[in-house]
Image: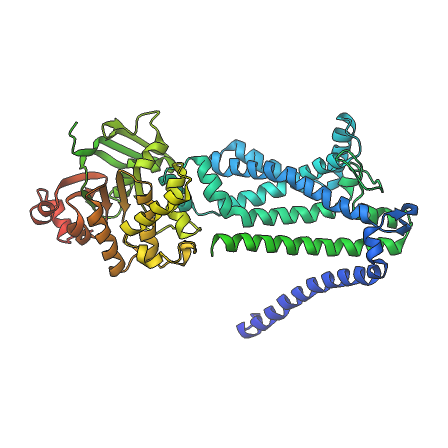
Length: 279
Length: 253
C-alpha cells in the first residue's frame, strides 16, 4: 500500500516535529530540574566562599576556579598540537597510507572512554613522571582526550577553505607556510573554534579523567603543581559520598550556567572575529 | 638571447597523470607586448599558462620536460626558486578570487609578502595599483571594507590590482573576462592596453574577438600543440595553417 504524497507530507511534518520536540523536552527537563533543585543553594556566598566540612557547607569557589583552569590549560596544550597536526595532514602531505593510519588512529582515540585516559594519566603523568595529582597532570590528560576532536574538526575546517584561495596566495609569491598562516588558517578559524567549544564542553564536564589526575583538593590552587577539584568532580563527590545533595545540585546549576556562558562568549568572540575580517 | 624576448619556451611537453597536455611547444614571448592565446577547450592553453608560473606544481601528476627560459634562466630546472618566479610572474584567474579580507589588504598582500611593512609605502602601492587597474575611483573611500562586497567586474579589477601591486615582470591572464559583462570586459581591456607598455602579458582567451582587439601577437593552440603563432593581424587575416583559419572564422571551437 502506498501512502499518498499529501498524507506522507503531513506524516513527515508530524514525525520530524515530534522528534524535535522530544529532544528539546529532554534537554529543557534536565536543565529545569537541575535549576529548580540547585538554584536555592546558590547565592553570592556560595560562589565566592571556600567549602567547609568537605563541602557540606560553605561555597565552591575553588571548584569554579578549577573548572575554568583545567579546560583552559588543556585547550592551551591541545590547540597548537591539534591544529598543527591538522595543517600537516591537510596541507603538507598527500593522501597516503601514513595519513590514513594517523586519521584512523585519531578516530579510535576519539572513541575511547574517558576513564581510560584518566587511568593512563594516573599511571604516566602522576606516577611514572612523579608529577602527582596536579593541574598539569589533569590538563595534559584532558589535552590528550580532546586532541582527536581538535584534529578532526580543524582538518575539516582547513579542507573547507577553497582551493582557489590557495592558488591565489601561491600565485602572489607566498610560500606554503605564508599561505597556511595568512590565508588558510584565518578562514578556518570558525571551524576550528567549533572544535574548541566542543572540547571545552567535554572537558569542563569531565570527572573520570580529572579525578585520577588532578585529584580533588578542596583548597584554592596556587601553582600548576597543586591539586585542584572541578565542579563536576565536586558534584560527583558530594552526591556519591552523600555529603550534601543540596550543595551538589547547587554545584550542578553553577556548572550548567558556566557552560552556557562559555558557549555564549565563544560565539560572540567568533562573530566579532568574522565580522572584523569581512566588514 | 634576444633582448626583446622575455620568455623562450623550447620543446615543452607536459603530462598530467598519463594525459599528454602539451606536446613540443616552442614559442618566444616578446617583452612588453600582449601575446594572445586562443584555441578550443582542452587545447592546453591553461596548462601552458600555469606552467609559466609553476602553479602546475600544485596539480597532482604534473610532469614537464623541455625548457622554459625566463630572461634566459630555466624556470623548470631543478632547484629553481619557485617562490621567486611566482613573484616575477603574476597571474589573473578566470574567476575573480578576492581573498576574504579588506580591499586594502587584498592589494597589499603581495607587497607584504615581499617584506614591505611601512603603512605609507603600502598606501602608495595600493593607490597606484588600483589606479592602474581602473578601480581607484570606485573604491577609494572604502578601502577597508570587505572585497567580497564588490561586484564581479570590480572584483576582477581588484585581482588585477593585486597582481600589479607585486610589481611583476610578466602577467598571465587566464580567460580573465569569461565571467564578466561587456562593460567590465572593456574596463579590463582598457587596463591591459595601458599595461603592455610596461609588462609582458600573456592572455588566454576563449573569445577570439578579444584576442583580435588587444593582442599584439596571437598563438593558436589545438589539442596540446601550438599550431601557429604570429602577429595578430596575420593570424586573423591570412593564417598559414588551414586549422587556424577554420577556428578564427568560427568553423569549430
